[in-house]
Length: 428
Ligand code: 5GP
Image (cartoon, rainbow, N blue to C red; front, side):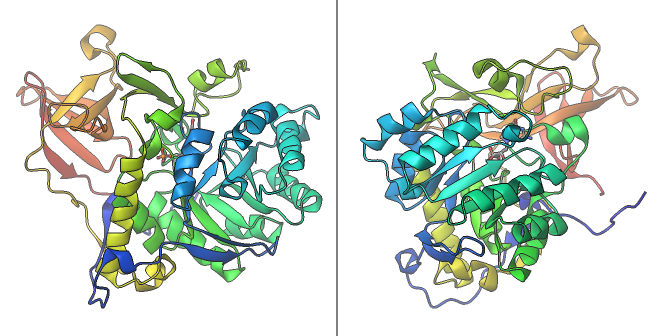
């Protein structure tokens, strides 16, 4: 057994340090990047923020909004060739989307996602990117699969993931991937860390894996854990060449999900809900590593995209980066454990289960900023997921101790009035 005692950081543990800058306006920042990919040799020019291949995010409607800003979308792997055909005539730019597959074809020659991908690439040669997405890309199978995809599609840009360590980043690049997706467990509807105890804090994973990718001429895409535009800026500053987002785009009109009583479902792609929606059986071995949440409907995605781009642009001006590409070079960070002033916010908590009824000690709750679950534009104000650890019966002051799911902070709350009383960092 070995313990790596070097501190590993999440986005909320760091802040970009401002620097003297000659940029007079946010407009002066060049937000697009030209990439020359290592294995395909393809040259592509885009704004390197990706909509994730999740239900409610990786849709054609989302892609059409994303492409207006030269951003990219990975279309979900359950999207059929017929749906691609329908979308093709509606203004979709094929260069702005990636097709997606898993690795099931290695065991099942009839695997639907692989068959869909092949058909889509035949019908639309302008689709330049293939995303091979599995929750755990550490299997030797994955490496073999990437070699096979590279052999079959030598000129396509291959995105492979997910991993969180430098060695595996290198391994995937050396074996044919152009871009490696980084992130195990940071996602907004992901429960891998609580279900399996596996993961690496996302900011450190980005820093370490981008260094490894740069060493072998590859690229990385930071995937998961961005909650605010500033987190995307931190990911770029930490060395991510591209950033993928899911939850920040969920719940909008472009999610193509039904709105019921002003709310929209959003779920992890390894959740029971996803299996239910896509008619897959639970086989008794597969865990449920995603969760289902209900979001307030947020209207069109455009204002959210403007917020995201405005935030990242502004970060560039603060650190003197004339181009998005320069962010990692210009960035220096300070570590901190209290990055946001919450003086005007009140934490309210929402119990999933009532502890006294169930007698369970581990309950999941959601803490929201203020009294409401959403801001004036209907955007969710979820602060973080909390787990009830213990009740302070000794002092009998009716306090409860809540840990966030990364076990980095506790909140003491007065049980009777349900107010979060403050954040207390826990020693790591
Ligand atoms: P977010 O931007 O919402 O924080 O994270 C999005 C990312 O979470 C996705 O791109 C994907 O990598 C990951 N993800 C999506 N669904 C699941 C799931 O059910 N389980 C896990 N472990 N990760 C998921």
